[in-house]
Amino acid sequence: METKDVFALLTCVLLIASGGIYGIKFLRKGNFLLGLEWLIVAFSGSNLLIFLLTQSQISYGISFFCDAFSRGFGIPIVTVLGLMAVTHNYKPSKLKDAAIFAITFASTLVMIKSDFMAKPLPYFYVVMWFAYSAYLAYFIARLARAGERLHALGVTVAAISGLIVACIYDFYPIPGDDTKAIFLSIALVTWSYMMIQLYYAFFALERAKACAR
Image 1 (cartoon, rainbow, N blue to C red):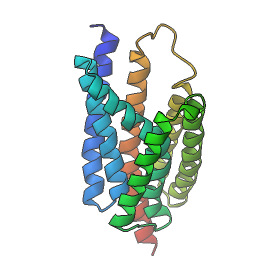
Image 2 (image 1 turned 45 degrees about the horizontal axis):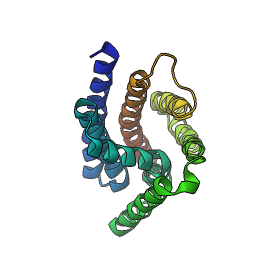
Image 3 (image 1 turned 30 degrees about the vertical axis):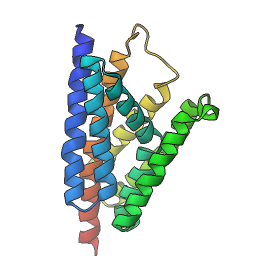
Image 4 (image 1 turned 135 degrees about the vertical axis):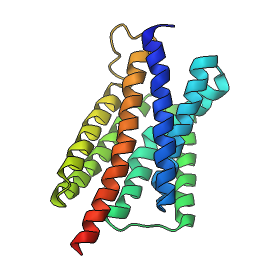
């Protein structure tokens, strides 16, 4: 096993830990949208790790579905709605949370199974990530106005790096990275950082809003 493959495995563990720990933290704080999405990312990482170690096609299929969900709907829609709890006081009921996940899961299934989506799917992912990045720009501005400039900078790094990963995912393979181990490591570290940074930025903004009242 090459060094880059070992690093890819380690970044899988990092993704699992980040999504699991901070997903549970969000759930305990009452934000089920962000908590469950973070746990879905961790679950995807767990199955990816199993696939890399055992070549299990079942684990690959689960990871593939979860990855498609998060890229198409989980991050661009569910995460934005979850962050809107602090930017717009959007706090849906648990029933609405369940409906949001049910609709986005069903949409993901249609998206990956429909022949008409095969060609435009990579472009769809990028468009959705640009929409998510646009909201993050607003979120960053809110952090800056609240005096949380360090968190604003941290989310800016997460937004830019995440957008770069989204753009090169299907379009710009890294030279010499035939197994995608290098790209995988970069992507998983980026997503891990994003989940951790958004957790702390979310509650920093929440505290700043409370102090301003």
